[in-house]
Image (cartoon, rainbow, N blue to C red):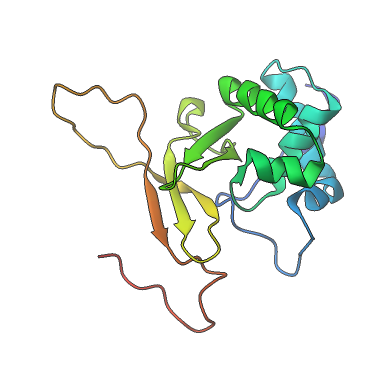
Length: 185
């Protein structure tokens, strides 16, 4: 067991819903929040090592930004927050996706966003198979890690390679205070 493993032992690494935040904490950007959270930096280092990814400063910071964000981010959003060039960001995201460190979410407008893989998944292979929610007001996409993608039996002529399930509606932050979420149709 390494020093980082010992330090992180017994500590919850991430909330089960990526959009959850401790009460009263607000920072300007996910990059600022990640930088202020040593547990995020430790977890990013540990994740890179466990997945045999060379832990450069840029890779660690990109992962910290994704871990610190309550919602999925596009490559352009990461690029803006970190003042990095597009090629570096997308090469890093491609490596992370190949290693299962992040997963991609394609919304209805074909915009690709990325989120850190769920560390609390019961089976690592299922870490990215969960439902996503897109707020129609703020346009953010949230991972609903505790909600698995429903099983679907397609006709035999089709072979499913990946099941994406994107719900749309209004997130809790965009709803007026005191309103209950409407029932699903």
